[in-house]
Amino acid sequence: MNLDTALLAAITRKSALAVLVMCSAGPLERAFAQPSELPTEDADRARRSREAADDASFGPILIIEDIEIKGNESTAARVILRLLPIARGDILRAGDPRFQRARFKLLATGYFRAVELEPRRGSKRGHVILTVRVKERGTVILNRLYLGTSRATPWWAGIDGTERNAFGTGVSMGMGGVYASSGNAEDAQAQWALTLRIADPAIRGTPYGAHATALYTRASEPYRVRGEPSSGAADNFRAFSYSRLSLQAGLSIDLSPLSQLALDGRAEWVDADAPLAPTRERPDGTFEAVQIGLLSGQSRVVTVTLAFDHDTRPNPVLPFAGTRLVMIGELGATFVGGSYDFAIGLARYQHWWPVHGNRHVLSLHLTGGLVAGQAPQFNRLHTSDFNPLLTPRAFGLVVSTSPSPDIFGTGADDTSYGDFGASAVLEYSYRLFRERFHVYGGDLFVGAGLWGLADSRDFKVRDRPLHRAVPVGLIVNAGLRIDTEFGIFEFSFANALGRIPL
Image 1 (cartoon, rainbow, N blue to C red):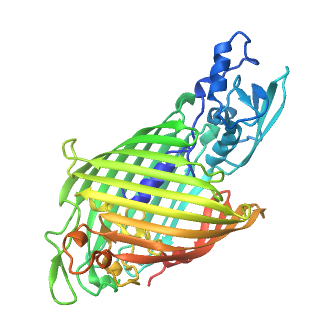
Image 2 (cartoon, rainbow, N blue to C red):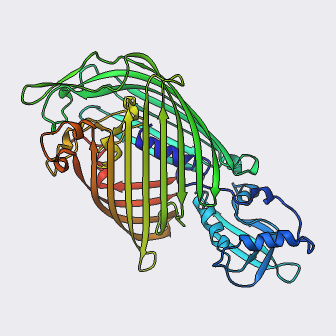
């Protein structure tokens, strides 16, 4: 899988395929326990509950007599109960960090725009009834809207959406599709893709979840055959066609209230009309071989993927604090029935620092990827995975041939695919408003950073120092993010550049 697809898959595994963040279930084996009080003779259980409490907790000891759920209209109460790291009968102190984690966990699902925990006196001294009051978000989310034009593709249009909480069960179902008109490059054809998804993040109230995705694409991949690297004119490219049917399924487990591990298997059937020994004519008149990255005719891709996600953001939609870490490793091999031997490692680290309260926020965004072996073309790292100023791939389809600006003279404009990639962006955002005109919130932002993408040949065969042999480019972006009932909408400089021909 490519970087954006892999990270989106890691994200959507979490809260019932929610596009936002993960959810995890606390002590689910006790989530539906009904006793109104803790038996006094159960001293062993009391001891374990006290030992489980965080050392930083303070205040009087409380016994959770009951948990009430209020404000939920679309989400079943049992779904909320199984997400809580607190259950009926638990013994905690008033300052136990699990109260705060419970609020963060529910917000992290993306189901709710506000969560409040209100304890009140129970039937006995030291007993409390915990009221969890929620304000629900819309559960039908627009993950991405595909719409634009480029020199290579006259137009493309598509949509990807998810019902994240079908019938209030916590199960999500999603689908998406895109169509791109026949391109202007030689031999280019129309492209289209369709995907279907389903996930249950907590099977029968356990910490285990299951998810599955199906994807079918008809692609027409452009590759450069002539022209200056800085020119994205379609007549400098030729295209070849391929189709792929991908089936992916896996299981996830909640390691903690804020961490999740997932194991996936993927099988793909690929049919490619790949050119035989394609070449590119350089501006100086010499020729070089072009890497296509797909076997001609029918082939298979069989992989296993391990993904880890840790998320401590109190607001996953418009973050103002916390950390997000996603790490993904994928291995494809011929000995399990595939046609390609390769390994892929992807990682993304993000951290937010509030400045002067939560009104001003600084954030750091680091992304990296590594591909070893002969990965299929659609699984290799692409420039748009790291440079947001370029048109991103749509379900793996390449719809633009515009090169990256070569600001530093390192050959960034002559790079499309690579084996090593990274980006680092520092961003400042300003909370513009919250809860206004039926819109949940809006943030202004501006960011800058660097990106790089290199082929293994850039390290092995070069005629200049390493720091100039690796293609490096500049990232500059600014705009407005709006949080609505139907998801996040970003109006930015980079978003506009990716939708118009340059």
